[in-house]
Image 1 (cartoon, rainbow, N blue to C red):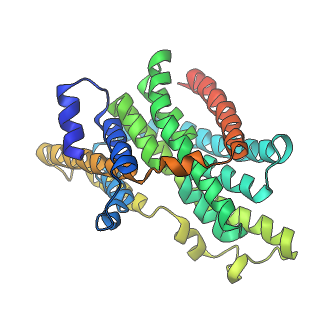
Image 2: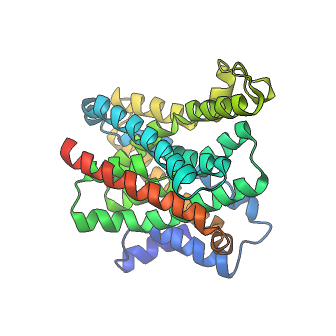
Length: 322
């Protein structure tokens, strides 16, 4: 289907081949279905995405990243903090859903989608149903924002940098951020991925913070985390850290040092594009529309209000900063 997506977009101007790949996967997955023998392969789509991001490091414009570095770091921290607090506020005060569901939604919205939901769930011990509701809600917004963000960016005439940083700071999961960024432009895609990777690195901090908060609430013990994991445990941080980021940094450093020839850079860029294409076919195949329809209205309202608030504020700030 990845080859088909590239062929279709070469013949018919349907927009980004990555979005076409996701849509093809969704159509096939929700009509024909995924055969049992193919399911293990489809589930590796996140690995293909991570490998594509690692290779993408060879084409990153390091000088631009360094120049904007401090500003982007401040924006990332501000976006994560604002998102988590906004979703928690809406969930606890206005919509009033169970507090652990609100916390899972806040982590998923603020850091890295379903991965953050799973990481935080390990420390706060919600019910399986609460995890399922939170994950389904995040997946719903992943699908919607993947299509809406590029359309909004084009309608507003956003620059590549503004769009990339906006998507990287306010969209949820790495896959949709990458697809939306590259659907807008190559430069926007690179900025979106760079910002998203930096944001993902905060997952350990958020997971530990939530575990400490609920541990104190439920047991009065502020010194330890569930299962005996101490707040100072590097292993806990590392277990939740997106380790492929290390590969991305290494490849970027090698490229900046001139380790690759022009032909090798072109080959790495082409390989990265193909890996993204296959990853997004797999992403589409894993989206189950029936499950999304079963998501309760209240969690959706919480995330919608949080996303509209934070994305609007961040877009206004970015338009001034850049």
